Every structure is written in C-alpha cells, then in structure tokens.
Amino acid sequence: MSVEQDIQEQVQSAAAGRAPLAIQGGNSKAFYGRTPAGTRLSVKGHCGIIDYTPSELVISAHAGTTLAELESVLAQEGQLLPFEPPRFGNTATLGGSVACGLSGPRRPWTGAVRDFVLGVNCINGKGEVLRLGGQVMKNVAGYDLSRTLTGSLGTLAVMLDVHLKVLPRPPLETTLVQSCSAAAAIEYCSQWAGKPLPLSAACYLDGRLYIRLSGMTEGVRAAAASIGGEPLDNAGHFWEQLREQQLPFFSGDMPVWRLSVPAATQPLALDGATLIDWGGAQRWLRSGLPADTIRNTTAAAGGHATLFRGGDRNSTVFQPLQPALLALHRRLKNSLDPAGIFNPGRMYPEQ
Image 1 (cartoon, rainbow, N blue to C red):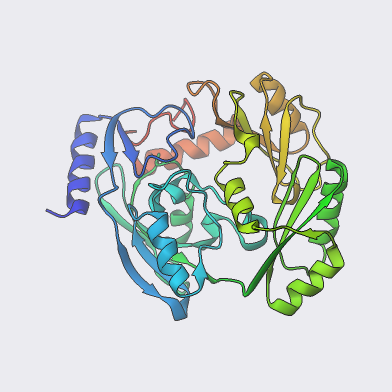
Image 2 (cartoon, rainbow, N blue to C red):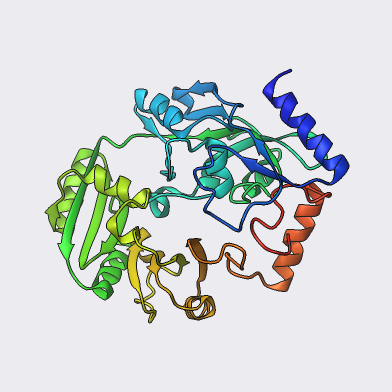
C-alpha cells in the first residue's frame, strides 16, 4: 500500500466515525493557530520531488517534502521560491508551508504563497482524491480552489501534492541600512514603492531602516545610489533571522502579534515593542495588552491582528470574522469536509 493510499484510508475511516484528525507535516508550525485537536494524521512520509522543469519555471513535489530539500534542488538551477517561506525548523514541509500560507520578506514585491500555487492534489473530508489546478499556468481547472486551500491550516483537505511556479534567483542582491524614525521609514518606503526600484525587502527595527535590492546588476547599483545608506555585511543572515524570527526582538515571554495594515499607516499607538516589515504592511508587536485593544486599534487603521506566538491558544487567535464572511467559510468547509474531521477549531472556534 502506498503512503497516499494509507492516508486516504485513514481519512475514510475517520469520516465514517466522524472522528477528528489533526493533520501534521514537519510540525514546525504547531504554535500557529488555535490548539490542534484530534488523532494525528501525518503526511511527512509522503515526500519527494515529482517533477521539475527549470526551463518552464515549475516544480511539483509531494506535500511531505521538506523546504530544505526543495530549496536545495532549486538552488542548483539558480532558482528560488519567490514567496520566501519561513521554515521555523528544519522539518518544515511544503504542504505545511502552503497550508499556513506564510510568506517571508520578499512577499510585497514578488507575491504571496497563493500567487505561485498552480495546483494541488488533495483528499477531501469524504476520503476522495481531488486534483485541482495543474502543473502549468495553462491548466486552470480548479485553480481558484487550489489557491483557497492556501492558508486554510488543513481545515479543508489533506494536501498530497503541490505544483508551484518558481523564479530565477536575482543576479545581484544588496542591503542598505540608514538611521531614521519609524514615521520616516514608513514615508520613505511609501515613496520608493511608487518608483521602478528593484525592492525585495524593507524592515525597520531599533531606529534603523533595512532595504534589500534584488535584480540585474546595473539596476541594483543605480537604485542603491538613489536610495542611499550603508551596505550591510552578511545581509543574507539578517534576512534569514528576520524570516525565521530568530532576531533578539522575537525573544522573551510576551505574546507576539502579527498586524496587517495598509503600508502607509503611521506607527500605531500600542504599548510594546514593534518591528515593521514588508515596507510597512506587516507589523510585529510584542505586547501584553488585551487582545481587544490590539484588534480594535489595528481595525481602526484598516487592518487586522493575529495572535502569532504565545498567549491563550484556546481563545480567538485570528481576527473574528464578520457574519457574512463566517457563513462563507462554513459553506466551504461543509462542502469539502462535511463531517468536520479536519483540524476542527484550528482557525476559529466555530469551525
């Protein structure tokens, strides 16, 4: 019996008994979302590269394939995963990364995870194998539904295989650093966003603005001269530490909140330490403030807040949904997982 058949039989058995399943890959992001419930269903053994055509910029792999293996194969051909997914551990898998829908520093300029998902093979809550989308951009049957699974935290289906678009690695990358206030950093990033600059990352921390430029050599050098600042040594290490939340900022006992706001939003009046990422569109907040205070302040700025690490994992972790959107979530859940066996309550108490 293949690993895929074994997973399918486990799902069919669970569906028949309406027994909850906690889907698990490398378990590197178990901290994310609400507390998992149900019997563990591991997809880690369903791993390996299925197909890779560098000239077509597409790769397909089983969901249990580690990001380390995937990125190593791409690096040999001078290519990369454009959404720069955080691993949060060496065991991180492709399926888990797509299910969590998390992107790294490059996201505002190259796109999010869902922008590069061409197709997904998965098992729904009835134990049926669904093949959504395809391995190339020309095949769009089920394309939107495969993208819908991205960021669903395994509440809709068990991912078996993922087909992705990849991009060439930029010939040159450089990081510049300059001292300024948080308000000035946001203003600079807003100005630069409206210009044809090869930006690929922008972060503000402890009074310093870090700007990464990626692209053709002449374009990067011209942009560096226009932006100004001092070159950062060992810049790759800095961006990796930011992506993996290994900077000193993320240490400590305070809960870590992820705030998504319009990029030009000025610093929010919230007590705690703040790191500005994505040129202003993503803010990391370490604070002991009540959840309602954080969410209300973020919502007033046109954004939403997620309890990313720490805090009460059995409470509302993600921004509460409006009734109409919650109803849509429920209909989608009922369509793909009518028995409600996949990661129940992982995203919202109501699901």
